[in-house]
Length: 263
Image 1 (cartoon, one colour):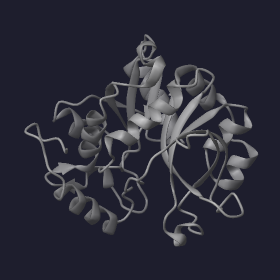
Image 2 (tube, rainbow, N blue to C red):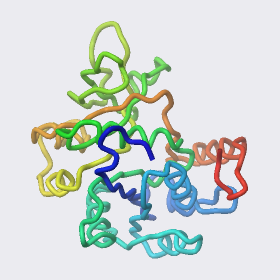
Image 3 (cartoon, one colour):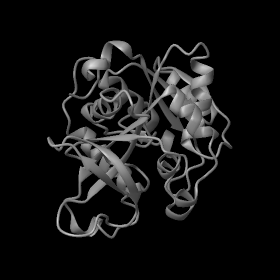
């Protein structure tokens, strides 16, 4: 693992929140992708990133059983928690009650084709800045139709001179900032310092969060610092049957190692 100058001082844990009560594609966490439930494919992508221990935060017993059946680790969480962040916070308390992990990586449970470098970039974004509370990733929008697509969240960042890392200034569903230049697609993978996650879940929803329907604005309004790493591709999220078919096709085209992982 190589996470910059602070790497030796960190012990990351990857938590993957998942539940069956998805609205657009019911029970998608258990949808078959090449003989395995989608949540198992996401768990495998998290292992391939090689950033630390991987635990699925399962809102339902069937999800936990699917992960345990392939030798993975899962903890049950309250299925009625209001958000994935609340789910990973509860899972962290149950999986690591002694507080041995100081960096928490939140990977959504519907990213079966997530590339390892994207997860590593989110960790890099956080650990390289001791004053940062959170890290995340973004990619420049290439398709003009995505600019006005409200399902494509945007981030405004104060990029450093190299253009690879920056500090998040705002998140929106609107194509900001105005004027010529790149607009960045915010990818919903987060890293937290443990104290920052504890603080975040203790805060009430903020005015901008309620207005934009974007949870990360709560952190910014509370004065928390979110660092952003630039990546080149946006991972496919699975919310529809068509996206599920595309994920199957993408994985079918990738070479596998002898251990069954995708190269």
